[in-house]
Image (tube, rainbow, N blue to C red; front, side, top):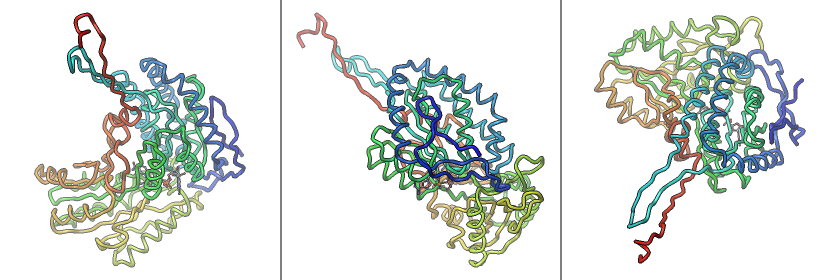
Length: 488
Ligand code: NAD
């Protein structure tokens, strides 16, 4: 069985830890590899290498740094199918979903290729007689990414290409549940011939994260994961003087107004709820109908029933398993909770068995209707294939309910009224808004704007925020003495 390694200073090395944990295929429980739960010495080695690599990298012109990214884009495109198969094996999602994830990763590499322009500073001549002032952007130093399990190939690329293009060196800490994908990607990235130490990968879990939060050489941390850990990472990293951006969990509501196109809405909503088995931070979770709801309810129920669940590499499978057996139990418990609170099951995906994959963590699409708005299920992130359907009388009430939630990752509305859509856009407390869109995922040139408990920090991932996050400004005021102004 393969024992995964760390990539430090341009070489694959064993972890200092002797604690290895099985990486499982969620569809079958087959052991795919063993991942070390790294210790502080692993992070110290990576940080030392990254610090060394940074000295050369920061002095490499930005126009040269992006040449590596152009090459990386081609490498990722050439290997996308292979990477996607690994994503399916360790995360459980379908091949189509895994392939789409790589498209998003590549978009960020492309966007970061614009860094020669994006990183340009500002200049003011003669702020006083003979004195000029300008601002330049310089890299932070060593930066690190701590990633969740649900997008093993994409999420690191919300940060990595920008960090490198801005002149930082980098440490990747993948999720211990899905360490194979980034291991594969780093193996592919070896073909770039980056200077040693510029790119490093450390395997591990909590102890590795703590070591990253404590290491003095690490200056910037990008975290994506659940809100409790995001809050912890933000608090501890900031207290240690680091720049931190920490994206957290979500509970995404969708309003369906009576004037929405039923067929289109139902299809888009179902894709949003059940894509990646509901394990997306932008998955629709609570569907709020306003007014008449018979037709949309029937349509959602029919689409949910028809969505085929199974192993992600099998043809016409549209939904895979959830990531772990614990996850499956957690989702089952939340469904039970919703029922105890008064909800009714319209579609029940519990007790689903898939032929040939009897040990998989499968839950088929589930719909629960009429859960109480002030109950636990309405407030809790499910992160599984469960749609909660609630019926409300007015758009005012619906927006009030949305804004009472603690998360603010995404909120969507389906309507044919521009006025209601505009009002929703203005009033809804979420950083990513969808109008007749089910997964309002910003493309690479826009920031991934979570609000409230879905984000801790100031600067988001992607877009211009990424340039600001991965650089520090330096303002220079300068006077060159000449004959005519020497008297000053
Ligand atoms: P998680 O919080 O369990 O793990 C995320 C990372 O933190 C992993 O690398 C893990 O090793 C580390 N970690 C876990 N527990 C820790 C602890 N106690 N101390 C220090 N480090 C710890 O999240 P997950 O289960 O891998 O991912 C699912 C969560 O991520 C969901 O809540 C989802 O909404 C969220 N997510 C958010 C976004 C976003 O953009 N806001 C995107 C994807 C996923």
